[in-house]
Length: 193
Image (cartoon, rainbow, N blue to C red; front, top):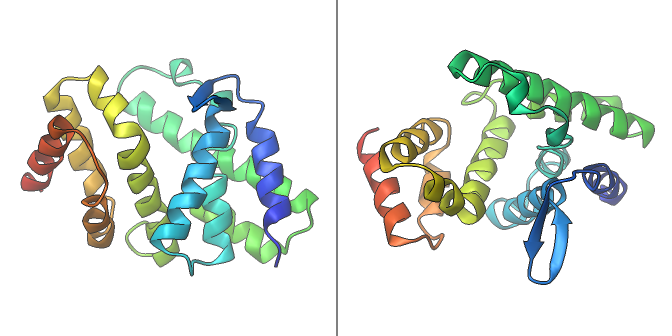
């Protein structure tokens, strides 16, 4: 089945994101870039993944800017509610796009299931998606995150993240080049597991 119409539609939707990132001399919408990075990492990490995982990886943050973190209480409960609502939003938007493109309903439901991270640690495809999210974070976003926070917070976030990913993903992350500081923080987080 040709997934390129879905990828194009996801990217078109995400191109509405007002937040931009510079890549070389090109300015891309933040979520378009994130989707491209997810697809690229998945193809390197597990190229034989299913169509559902390929679709979910590309639209994992679809419409993320439409639900602001500031609209929720700035505590742990508010954060978890925001994340839960976001997962439902991603599934709803992606499902609508896939329905418009007339993909099979079984595939659409599978993508929505994955986007809501259902049965993490039990479902192989949900785990794969979570692993790719982690690898993309380490490759492209951890340095900027670490630059904004003190060591203790970064270690805590890494530790919580590592609990959600597979040992295969943790091993794969070791080959990603990071700064000495971030490398040390990752090692400290791993030692606390």
